[in-house]
Image (cartoon, one colour):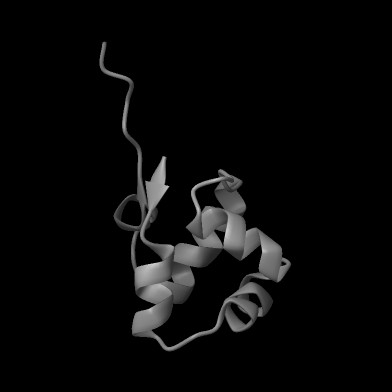
Length: 67
């Protein structure tokens, strides 16, 4: 799963720490999310989407395995 967190965080001129505080997680969680090294809980995905004023599906891109 990929995401557009870094792009939208920059658009709002938020630091990773500021975004982390808004959604009640550690800054490291935001770092891992932006690096696509962590899949968020549904609650965290909802909170992030709410901060950015968009639907979860617009923020997170799920790519199915195609074989």
